[in-house]
Image 1 (tube, rainbow, N blue to C red):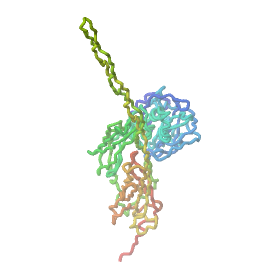
Image 2 (image 1 turned 180 degrees about the vertical axis):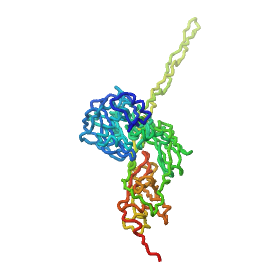
Image 3 (image 1 turned 180 degrees about the horizontal axis):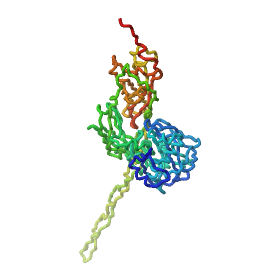
Image 4 (image 1 turned 45 degrees about the vertical axis):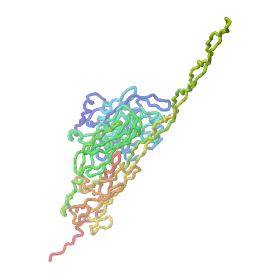
Length: 612
């Protein structure tokens, strides 16, 4: 079978020679950025080249991680601690960050990896990274290491999920972390990683890989590719790449997506983007983000973010009642947004219910298959910044001269002589002068400090951390109109009910979340394909209940699905995908199965009497 590269972005890469043969993997959804590095210390440092890539094999349909991820590196690291072999997808699904001192497991690939993380002494080559992982040699190596056949890995049902890893000295200990793990660990340490390793942990490591288009429930990244990134941005958008395998002789290249996200009709959803702050956004001049959709505007105001950080911003709205593509525009008065325009596809999932089952239906070749497993995200985490003024009172001098002008006397005699005759030819001079004050005004004032205490404080920033968790169950039971059902056993040909109950628990305000609002069920007689039933919302909110819609083929308008009369004895399992529990971090969803036992058929309840 012939394979070839399917990404135009990669086509030119294979013109450059490399000791591994390029082939079908082709679709390398990877981009990169980075910048210069700071200088390290005796306890906190990183050496260029001490990097690697964590590779996970992902089920392309369900998004599930297959097996245990493998770390590839050119060096022989012996970290004092690490966080095990978990994928970013595992963490998204609710896995916790746990420090372990167990022996670090890794593999040295052949040929060696290209440089993964840029540094001040040299930049990594995106082309080299794509060329390496989109090669037949890499695919065969990974297939062998994961214990699967090369043909199975590359048949289009699986994808490679790549995460850059850094090996560095932190607080005096040698450690191994992916970008996602550094962000989570930094949150645990209240910024302890960023304070000493920001150039690596929050810039060059996460920017080593990011998606150039959405895939596996992750959005593309179009933000700053040189500066230091916030923990939330790293967790949501950075430190990952995806390689897809496609047989080009059988499958045409995918057309560019006409929409960024898909919603269901008549559903309350939360649309979110990231707001980034290159300079401080504080309560004196807070940010306001405006979302506009279908002629209506929604605002999120009083947003504060410290310099160099970011925050998810969102609005809650209800989708239209009909299928369409709607455009959401986003603007802000402060900072910059990860997206300014979102095209959302609104679909109606209620259009493909199963046909009316007939008594003479047959399916002699039926073979049961396992229930599928779609993308499941049952927990979410997001943070909201808030600020508090930190007073710092200082005396601000204001020296002024206070005048005290007074007269200073200087009395002097002013003589005025005249002759006094004695009548005998003689006489004498008489001084008929006067005292005169030759004084002056003198300012006896002083300098007086008219200063005041001035609050030269600043804003301290804090985060409220919010979480949401989705739990649910699906109860499949015989319909109440089934006359011969016993407990959880019934005959084929009768109806079954599906009661889905879901609870969304969260410490966030109600404006941050929605309960689960939609559920779709697939059935074993159709191989969990072809037909499905969209469930009705019986009750909504953070505790919701959903059931089958009333069946138009039911005599009593029951909320039932009729099992085929030909279904064999044994387990009858209904698969339900619970969706549309929304948070600012995205949609929560859950795979549910419920079932009962088929024993006999409706024909067993028929009684045939002779005609009189």
